Length: 254
Image 1 (cartoon, rainbow, N blue to C red):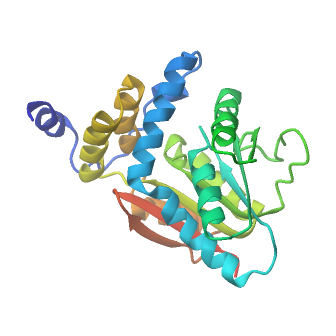
Image 2 (image 1 turned 60 degrees about the vertical axis):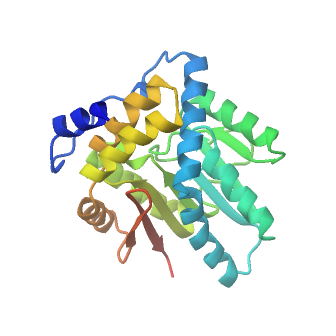
């Protein structure tokens, strides 16, 4: 009990200023085995957080009023593919025809995501691409960056500086035919405490232990996200809190 108390007493309250510090997961040369170990830890954390369920709900709502099939969904900065895989499995269980794809700047992450989907018996396509590239640097095959009904990202926005985060939101709005979804951390004392404790309870990866609290320090507060969305052209975007101290941004064309 002493370590968490010391950690909380040492952190800046109320985290009023954003501190975007380099995270270990983003560093070049990270050992592939440690990378996989970290992604496995994040998989457990995201499962407990139920962030995929919060993303699936608006996708299901869109499908109920949109006759086009399949509904094409793109997960930006997909990492190990956990969110994309979760969405595809949820769609399958509910008889919803989804074509879920994912892209990541890191080819190793793309390979891990592809292998994870294959183990789950899902024919999902993952490809290497820079979410901030414009025009889009397409992956191999018949990738069509303008053909997605839904464009989403989860736990990615906090990795970017303010200008790039705003740029990403604008690009997502341009690429999505119908719906933009963003799920990410909220910068707050509670968020910091949950990240510190949760990463240690649910993962043995030192990368996850380090990056979890750093991610909260680099995250945005709700008012900051709302202002960025407005400047990026996502007028009328909905923003709500989700467990555990996260938010869901939702913007639709109609």
